Amino acid sequence: MPSKRQENRQLQTDKIVKAAKELFTERGLNDVQMKDVAERAGAGVATVFRYFPKKDELIVEVAIRSLDAVEAEFRRIVSLESSAFDRLELLLDTLLDAQKADHYKAARFREAFESYASFRTEPLPEIDRYLARQRQIMDLLEPLITDGENDGSINRSIAIKPLIVTVINSYSSFTNNVALKSSISYLDQDIQPDIQQQVLKKILLDYCRAH
Image 1: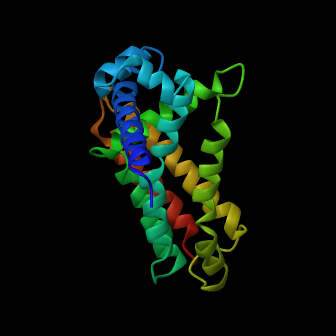
Image 2: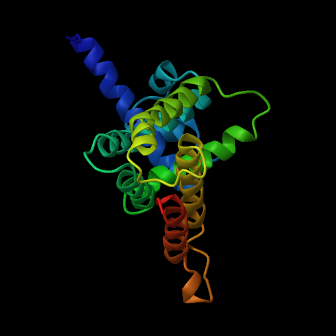
């Protein structure tokens, strides 16, 4: 059982990370200073630096925690008693739902984070923890992949594992991309972001469905 000191430390960490996530989502990663995080969290600047000596460490921690909801939903869906194809469709629905309501903020942050990380001349501190968390989430797909190889619900013209992983990664990237561009005024109602998301989902599922 954690001590009172450990509990207090965790609560303080959670407050700092929550404040940072809000600010990073509102302003972007580059325009937020540690003093801004301290003010939003109701903590002293020295306290924020004690928990996160570098801003990049805080950015990575926010990124890791932004995967919590995705992991929980993937775990739930993969454990369902249904065909591999039906669970794959639910996973795509989850990725689409992540662009809506409060979940959209997490998706917006992850997009900004991955862009920020890719332009670094040196790897971000603790980035291996983020990559390990992503691998952990993809590893959750193994039972679905095994079932897809055996239950006949998924097209076998391509090996099941690369097919499922590619479909999920492609749809995740695409839904993020068009959601973040939703403020652009599309002249044609037929190509609004939500229409494009649904169209791609249908294309992918039509291919994946066993014929």
